Length: 194
Ligand SMILES: Cc1cc2nc3c(=O)[nH]c(=O)nc-3n(C[C@H](O)[C@H](O)[C@H](O)COP(=O)(O)O)c2cc1C
Image (tube, rainbow, N blue to C red; front, side, top):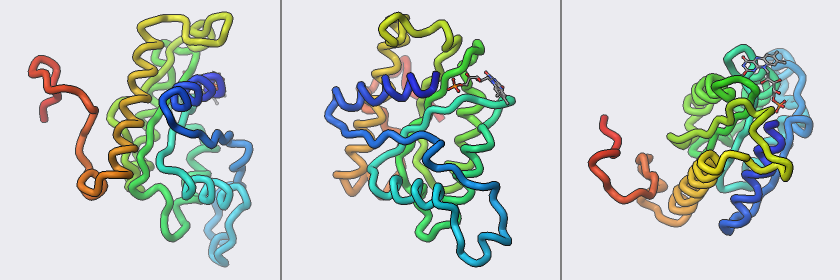
């Protein structure tokens, strides 16, 4: 289900002028983190591959299921390994979180849990997330999100994220200051308040 959501996200990004390097966790497989192994500065090949691929990108999109209301261990383990590289490649990396699961909350608790390590590592985690509820029923025969309103929200979330990543890359003022910037016109009725 998350693979399908990633394929749809890839299509949206490419339609809107981006290029995508699509990875799956099988490419970033790491043995369980072990400080005794790492002490000699030895990293699993999967961690090195994830670091290399991250460093070649302007932004990161992750789609993950939730396991027991949290981050799947395989993903957290890979984040832990990669966090030990210097420079640490999640730092200041614009990151969008997606999730899909058969449940009514679409893996959203896992996405919230994933914010914690990413934000701890200085990733710029986009305020909006997209979680596809009842994902086993949510795709039509062509593999698109069947519900038109959800499809519109999915695309709008990704395009808003791309606008921010693009601005952060090209405008130094956005690069140095993390501001919540959704690219929307001011509208007092819906503006976020502190
Ligand atoms: C160990 C384990 C724990 C799970 N815990 C949850 C959960 O807390 N919430 C949920 O919505 N789904 C849970 N699931 C179901 C997954 O969301 C489901 O396997 C889903 O298909 C995973 O997405 P995928 O198709 O992209 O692999 C769990 C599955 C496993 C294997």
